[in-house]
Amino acid sequence: MASPDTARDFIFVEDVVDAYLNVERLLGCGGEIFNIGSGRQVTLKEITDTVVLLSGSSVDVQWYAMQDRIWDTSLWVGNVDRSKQWLGWQAKTSLEDGLMQTMEWLKKR
Image (cartoon, rainbow, N blue to C red):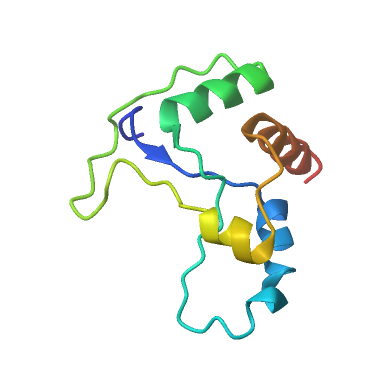
């Protein structure tokens, strides 16, 4: 795995679908950019710790097993202000709830 400090803007898939269901509100907004995300950075350590806690796993995470990608950045977070303003949308699912729902979905398959 990469550095535990690498951060991303994780979002639950149902929140993304919800945003796209509001896309008709963007008619006439050609050329504008709208980020769909949580607006919150979460480190790989935080998400890994949360998965381990929620799953009850005793896995020993091996950090730095993957080399950094030269084109990558360690911090990514979306500015969701336009999505809130134009779509009337924001992510509703917390990281913990999204991970729990994902784990339940995976257990059923």
